[in-house]
Image (tube, rainbow, N blue to C red; front, side, top):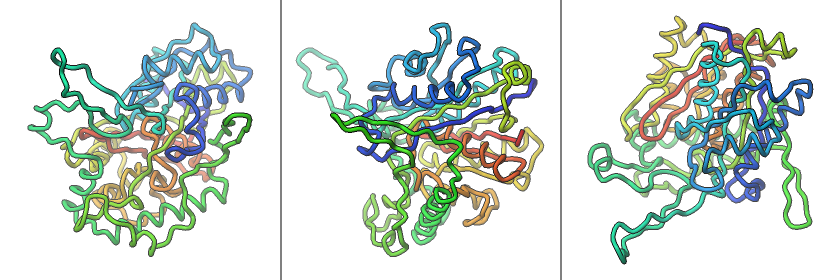
Length: 401
């Protein structure tokens, strides 16, 4: 990168379960929460100094429509002069937002940017296409929560339109990832997340959310997803989602969740001018494409490409965050990268299997968690990566500031 780019703050809401604690919060309001909290913690910072707000969002079919980033800027109380844009790289949308912000600053086109992401999967609507002919009765109600809708027949013919679970099963079979290994990984994710919560590993990134149900209010302070009661026996007892002789279950897959995240990125001059405290430095971001049927392997070529560009090796990363869309997919990636199944520095605080995966927010959450962890543990470098539906991978490199 040309100019140094620093992450100076990173906050997120707790992640809620589907239909859970955050389900009553509108998506645009949810997106505004970490932005408002971020600005409140930097009360000396004039909001008008922000050059841009970039938020990732995958669905954009309900309350997140019509540029939810701009809605969030206004709802958060930022000046109307602050522009905003919503980006969509499906599961990696939040990380894409962080990377785009970093590139703008690196090129000298911006000095101060808020980047992050949002998704309320609980509030994703059902949608209905218009009839293609008069009095047509062929319309189909589509669920926008996750996966394909309004499928192009040519896409189906050329690449298939497998569900996310089906793509994970393809990866499991193609890379010989058995059910026992997947369940063991899922258990580790739950255990690591529970330990991280107990050790206050997420304290620097979490902001409480006050929700209202009628006359009652409730304050959400921790992620809802982790299930500390999980055991090997309970995971083994779960039925596979795709039927007999398959391996993907609700226990070794990520959840359907709600949440939002916001990071403050700045150039070196902006850090000095606004008296900011850098947490981490962004070194670069790379995307790569893979077959849609095996989208889960996407982090591997993206990470290889990023490492080659930076002149790093995988051993140079003290911390690696690979989004846990499915245990099978993470294990296929770590094995392809030469990493042990239970490597301590890979998803050290657990991942989406335990914490949840609100699509547009997850990538930003991974960057926030990695940045705070580098400072908290005195580590030097981190790699953050996600697989992406329709066959992509995205990877970002960080260094402790």
